Image (cartoon, rainbow, N blue to C red; front, top):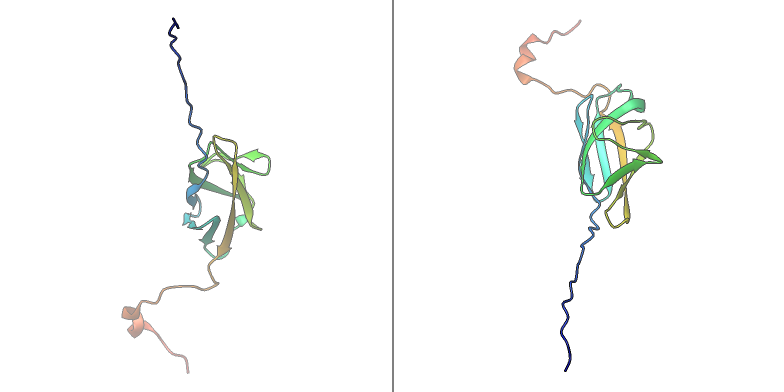
Length: 123
């Protein structure tokens, strides 16, 4: 006669999710537009983009720019050129996101038509 045995099986699911789901520049306040793995941010004309801090939300377990671990709302980066954020999932796979920061055009403004009567014309 055969004996019986109890077997315990343990299964661990390891997530492969690795996305940036939100991206903002802290100051000046600017929201990134995420399109696939590209993120575009527009800041006001004249903004020094060499030392900007971003806040971001991610589904990954770590975020790096080069060898520097990024802390949302804390780590500054130079956005003079596009910056590649590398998101790592729990399973170790990685996904690059390229963030490009541009400035609004010089002199971009809104026109308030209600002020038309205050315009003076030179001779």
